[in-house]
Length: 399
Ligand code: ACO
Image (cartoon, rainbow, N blue to C red; front, side, top):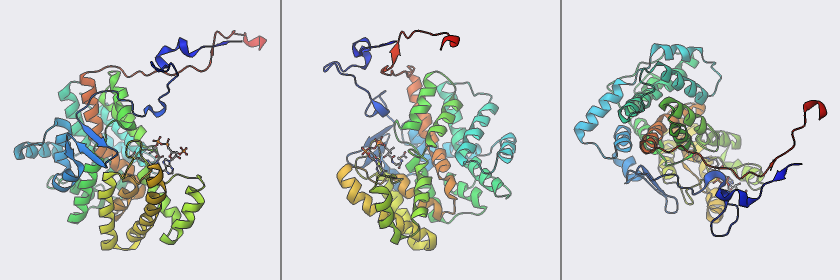
């Protein structure tokens, strides 16, 4: 028989005042570092990047400018922005080897799995892949942010048996993405909505995927490993893939009239969670959801059809969530509830939504990697050991 070890033998797990074991399951409310990148006020529906509110950025900024802001900590001058946007445009194209790889990847795999593979391979081809200096990481960040939409658009076209559309340097980041997807210049309102979606998804403090990136970087591993790890973390339905699952949930509901029945059958009984609702930090409405929701409403009116049906289902379901889950339990709709309808109006297939999210969020992941590694300490939490020690080893023939 072994021996169970007492809490006193694991003092690192004990509360200093009460002496009781403290488990921070999910690391809720644990601050692992200081940061100047992002502030979320989850009680007042506020989100700031480098001190600027998300509402101001969505209204007045562009993705390129927001990337500059997140990476360099200040708004650029016009000249700095021109240079920076030019750099991003120059980096859009992807190496021939990556295009060949995209052609070989099984067409029925999840786009996030494709992205993980393509980004990893891009890293293999980067001669500066082990350069973790500030300049080195910044250079890789700009390259990757610029190339990810190209990877997604090329993959989308390849899997549909269409010719890839080469990036157009005359177009901004968001316009160019839609252009590479569909082979024609997008309507201005759609390009603007895509630009805003990239801004809204660009950064969100120490979420699961950013944490994954920082954990990997904290071992002094390489940049691409950190980003590939973050892609893997974002791909889960409790995190970034919720924008795909939210759309599948609307499909399952089928029509606005079915919302009541579906809600009673699955949510009230606890059989399912509302996808695109609840958040570890927001205990009120997600400010990004408000902006996405407004675009979804506008597009439902403008385009009608399926976009309108999705909007009506979402609107009705949100009514239940806000009344029954948000008011009483602080489980309110989040950005992933609404973003999919906006992407759907742009003609983007549902399974790509998390990959689009990843393309935007790479900037946040990169900023956190840079910030953390600048004053690095390996991330290494503990577990409370609840098993036995000193068990007698019995030879296999005697078991
Ligand atoms: N629908 C119904 N009930 C919910 C939901 C939901 N969407 N989210 C949480 N709850 C309930 C849980 O069932 C649990 O109830 P219980 O105490 O009776 O067991 C309680 O609220 C607490 O849930 P936790 O999972 O402990 O909350 P946590 O903070 O760990 O999880 C999370 C946050 C993962 C986002 C959760 O709310 C969820 O699963 N939401 C659905 C998926 C989703 O939308 N994810 C996107 C998040 S935003 C982003 O990553 C971009």
